[in-house]
Length: 544
Image 1: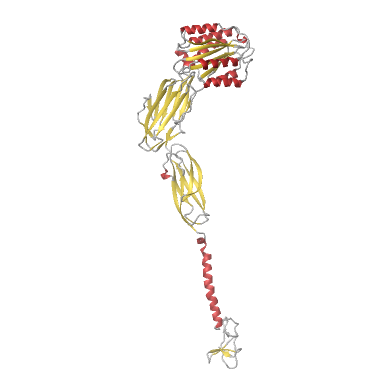
Image 2 (image 1 turned 135 degrees about the horizontal axis):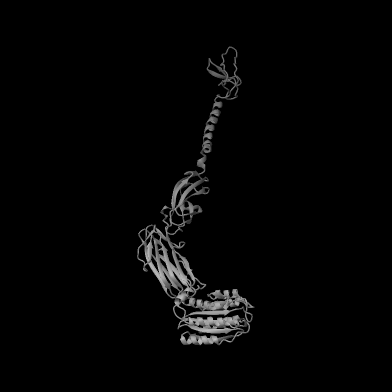
């Protein structure tokens, strides 16, 4: 059969299981499986002020080894010749294997292994030039007719040993295992099969499995086992309902092994035109530029090659690099899978939070009082933010709370400060958005609002009792002294109103509420003699 055209190969390709793995902007890229597409994007510097430039670099590369490396392909064909394969199935299986041989390039190499209870190498690795193809197809025709049980593990193990020991290290290497049954002799543990396939994958050998079905099969194919083997071997499992489907499947696998890992690659960069401008200096000319969207298209990217583009933008505002944004879209085809998509970070954003207002329930308080503060915080950036808002007395943190704000929104934050334990004095009480400075790119000059608070000692708020404590003694002491002194001088005592008369002597009569004089010695009432203008004590018999 003549070799299948490249166009036919492209039409019948299947994607291998291991697809693209996007990577964030990081100087350390982890090791990837061979033939894998690796995407990396970087933006430097990480912060730019208005008028400053930033350089963007996008790198799409394919690792070496299997999965589309330009160069030779080494393949081990493992053909089931157990008793259940007898008849047309076996003839179709040999025809499919020979079609695969015909589809190989001159620098490729193939090997033929047949198995039932025993495993035999029908033809060692042979270049698939004209003569090599003839020799390999002859070996396939000479496989002993089917009989016996299915020693599947021994066949897979032998193929792994052969291809890892004899296959070329600079080529893509693959194994294709065909069977219509399940292991019923030798090792049958699924975990052992998986370990064997993983060991092949670690040696850069892809494992493809083909399960042949049909209603006449007494011991049907174990599709689950074959799928797990292919997954562990970084290959693919195919199911053939009938033996007539085998040829197409083998040609699909051949095309997949030879196909470039990425075709029809489309790269779209979405720039935030409100904060940066594109400087029209891309190292790879874009197909189109429209309103901040730059578009490139690449026919294919082969293994061990890279497509790289760099360009610059100018910041219109305070712009920072943000890993949570993925503005770069990469879409490509691989095998039969089309429009495989990767959204690649990082992106550009304005990150700006602020405290735009603050009010206190009072600006004068007494030690131990509780004061309420309300502050309005805002997100002036272009992306949502989660950040802390803190209340500070001078430089001491009083309290913090977490705030989530969508871009362009505001929120009122409430704090309470119990001043117990704080020394009296003047305090600058501040509310600060993002006090720890975790929002990179933020301008902290508007993050804080402050009010001044006068905190007085507790006794200044209760001065009346202190005044009374001072004034009362000052009032009582003079009055008490005056009373004592007055009594000694005869100027005390209040008596009922009466009039004393002794003989013809005139005596002073006192009206209601009047005070009578008493003797300072015996404290008896005195009699006033107007002719002598003196007071006389009748008890002591003397003038006072």
